Image (cartoon, rainbow, N blue to C red; front, top):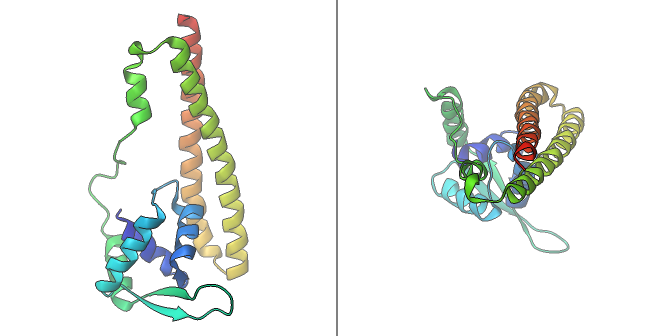
Length: 183
């Protein structure tokens, strides 16, 4: 996925500012795709040049004016074409620096490696809690905005992320036990 299709997809729900898109990205797509706010704003500019989105300025009584983005018909068409064109290879690209470090773990002390794996486990536990919050927020948003149909699909992706994270926690627990045996 390129960032643009995540942004176009979010804009199919409603018009949003760059700030709103960044928040929506962080609260919905962060477990599938990471993006920094600078990348989001840069991509919005490109998409506006290409005619996939348009923006309008909304004056504010207090603070800065808001630049609100809307998806255009050509943006909707590009999003739909991307959505329907599943790639042949559906496996996620693998770029896991943490696991590469474990792979070369013989060059670390067992204690240091165990410490990092425990830290990894804690971060995954925190990620599960974040997912629970995202799920709750999605449910509330769906009920508030009449997006129950969308929420069904959101929950499918949240459940996939939960299962992946639980598997990583299980791996960490097993690995820590194996390292403790070696000590």
